Image 1: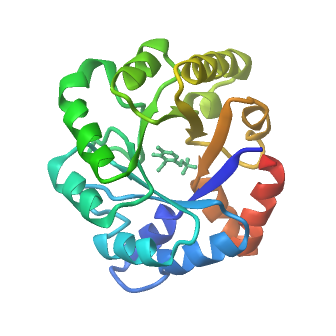
Image 2: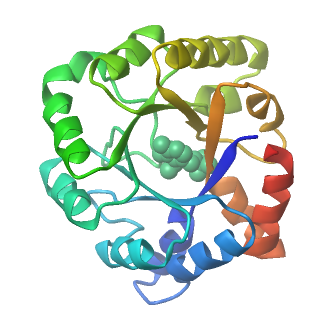
Length: 234
Ligand code: PXP
């Protein structure tokens, strides 16, 4: 059974559309936990397009399960992470003009810049995960930097017509990661229809899902939307 981390960025995106106070992603997080989420995920982007520092600090206070902060390996946000101390930091690539995180982090090409970030986060007891495409070189690079986990990018699996080939790459990456003593998560583009085959990959112990749950929550409420995903991820 995989743990479920619910990403509440999209609740903050609706709030930021009016630069107001509601809906509050902190309330969404409370309801997601009541609905059975094992953890809450937020991405503090450099452009602050959805989650704000205030959200992160409040979430640190109220989340009962696991708090996972997605972020770029940029000094200003690393300093915030060192201060707030989420349970996990997931390092992701970030491009200003992208609609959402478009690909995995190129860990293999950035070993020198990422190494001190991993050390700094480890020094204050934060679990470090790298969001990577299902490529052996990236998994090996994550292990080389002594990351604790990798999160395998499932965006291609979610988009392609050739799911079988995509699943094969994800399975191979998960097998390699486990062999290298990395915990394995997966996320991006997962929804109520496509999550099943990912849940059946034994090595994947955590799924991080945002858009599909928050979209469904518009119609059934967050607790119910999380509960329905929980049934599928058991
Ligand atoms: N995992 C990571 C690293 C992400 O960047 C995102 C998107 O913020 C997700 C999971 C969730 O993706 P989605 O919103 O498509 O479920």
